[in-house]
Each structure stands twice: as structure tokens, then as C-alpha cells.
Image (cartoon, rainbow, N blue to C red; front, side, top):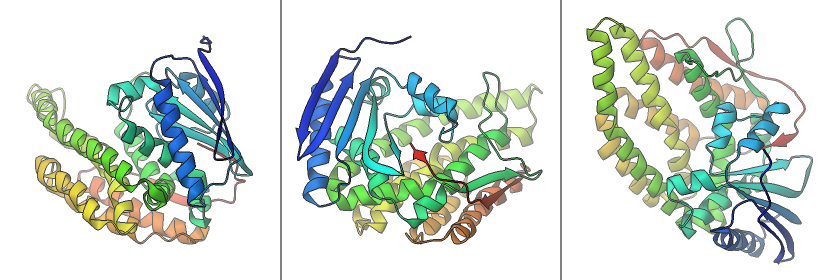
Length: 348
């Protein structure tokens, strides 16, 4: 269903044409102000590369998810993951004269970002940083592919029914190995590009949410224990379910903390990690903090000029950490990481 356009405007921001289209009314000006600030600051620092930006402020991103699904350009997690993102930047690597930024009002409101100017700036700065931070490593990352032991590419296969632990672990592996370089360099670029305080503010909220979320884990553990006691679930499967849930819930927070270390802001990184070490990891299994620290170490050493084979070798070290931990719990993550010379194109 097509929603009516309730706001359309054209702005000139530091010589950049900003076209705004919205199907919502309230709060639009706050998003435009944040976008204006992000563009101006990047331009002032000589970091900007576009001549125009299309800013879509939408109630949700369901229509965008459908369009990306049609062209096979979905990120880890598929259509559902797209519609859960607060902001998304779609751009063409072959033509960086402009980009299309999509703001998801529903998620913004749910997360408390809609009326938080610093969070808005951080989210927009991060999304704009993706095309601006392009380098040899990020380009090579688009050619990394996870394949199963049988050689079949691990594609998005979530359904309306239950999703296997293998599928969930595979989606996490895809994010940690294939997509991580883009996230790391985008965050580092935004931090060094003038938005360190805004990203720190946003990540403080992210860490606080993680600390709140881990408190609810106790209820899940009790539920799983009941399932085991009543014979509906084996103890081994219960451990696997909890481990995969913990990994998916907290391991990718390394993508938020490591860029602060890489940008020379270890004091802020330490403050963010203090929440994890004091309030999150102690409530999880002891292996979570260990693999988090190991993944952080690999992310810290990621260079901007890696060739495809070199990046694949790096990614396999990340995959080995994840697969090794899962194997200790009896869950075989039969995936390998390959590099192909497929043509690059659009990104999101």
C-alpha cells in the first residue's frame, strides 16, 4: 500500500542539494536539522563526496525491504532486519554523486531516538560514513561469501516458521565476518569526522539497553529449564539455544566499541565496555567475555588496504572463533568463508 506524501521540500546545504520526502508529519524538522548538521560538518572537514542527497522520512521501511529483496541486495537478517533498522543508506558504488537515506520513524520512536538530536546526528553520520569511508578492504568485503560444507551459498532462508540454530548462527557469522569491515570503518570514519560525542552518546544508550536486556535473560533461562525438566527439550539443545541467543544479542557490540579504540578514543571505549564487563557479561556464560575480547582483537588489527584473499584469511579467523565455541557445545557450524570476484554494485 502506497502512503501519501505529507512533506516534500528542497534544501541547499553547503552547496549540496537535499531533497526531502516524508509520509509522516511530526518530527520531520528535527530529522532535517540533524541531516543538515551532518552534511555541513562533513563538507567543512573536506570529507564529503556527494552533490545530492535524497532523504526519505518514512513510517517504516517495509517497502524498501521489498525492493531490496527483489534485487537480491538484502543485508544479514533479510527483510525483517531492514525494517528494524532506524536509518539506512542506499548508494551506488559506481556513482557516488548522491545517495538515498531512509529514516524509519517507527523504530526511531521505539528506541527513543526520534526526539534525541544527538542520537539522530549519530545515526545519520554513521550511514553517510558508509560510502565516504570506502576503501580496498570494504570493497573486498562485498565479495566474501559464507558457504556450507556442501558448497551451497548460505543465503537468507528465514521463514514465518521456526528458524534453525544453524541459520541463526550463520546470520551472525555473516555479520561478524562479511559485514563487519564496513561497519567498523563507517563508525571509525564518523568518530574521526567530527561526530565522536554523538556516537558516544548513542552507544551509551545501546550499552544501557544491553544491560537492561540481559536482565530479562533470567526469565528465558527459567523457561528453557522448564522445557528440559518436562522432557520437551534436551539439556544439550537448551545450552545451544542459550549460547546462540547470547552471541547474537551481545557479540556484535564489538562493532560499536572497537572503532573508538581505533580512532584514538580508548577512554570512551573503556567507558562503554565497562557496562559490558560489569553488567552484561557476568550474567552470561564465562565464554562470552572471552570471545568478545578475541573478536575485538581481530577487529582492531583490520587494515584499510587488504586484498580479497587477505581479507578472507582474516575473516576465517573470526569464523573459527565462533565455530569453535559452538562446537564445544555440540553445534556444528559447517560453514566456510570464500572470496569471489563478483561484480560490485549498489550497497545498503
